[in-house]
Length: 258
Ligand SMILES: [Zn+2]
Image (cartoon, rainbow, N blue to C red; front, side, top):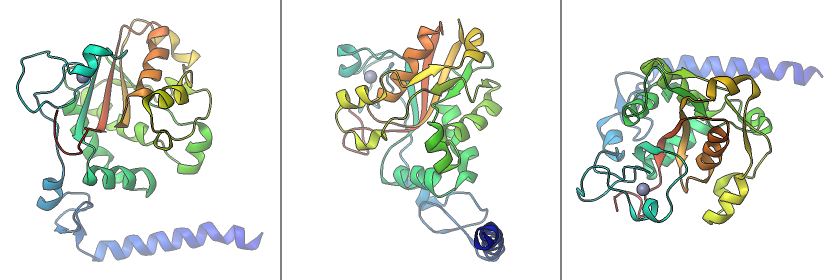
């Protein structure tokens, strides 16, 4: 009992000591490790490692194109299998730098970057973000939330709401069953099965969501199976539009465009 009681105090002391030490050390870019003037900012080498997604891209899923094909042109995948969501946009390509960023953000408590990442995302989603939109983060199952202590999508949703005036419904969607992490599931079909029926609209927000334009927030877009399952629940509840905004999206080949 005694050891258990003292453990949080020890952790707090360690954390306070680390913060004091950090204050004496030069601030470092979280991606490149180079010295920066302000904590939480990126250095030139860090910026260079990020691949921001700019037009031209698919008018539906937002995957970058290597050439200009004209406005509203869709990628072959969206033509063959139109996504259930209206549009998806991402701030950056999910490359090595983004991987380091997202896993640090997710698992190592580097939550101080949420404001910066939220700014990038607000820019990427400017087409559908406005004060009438409702922002809803992809929820974690409560068991995983307890393990991680925070939902990274909810952390990203807050600054986007502040910047755009859109209302954030942190609990607009709920996860009604626990699912294995998507990264442990490889094929698109298996990922679809994994999350099918996993989400539901919270009863409390049903009226608000009916007829509303929703922006679903997630950290990474891979096959889109998770956000499709969220969209299905939101459209079944009467949402007039469901757009998806993520920090990073997987682009085949890692860095480039199709
Ligand atoms: Zn597409």
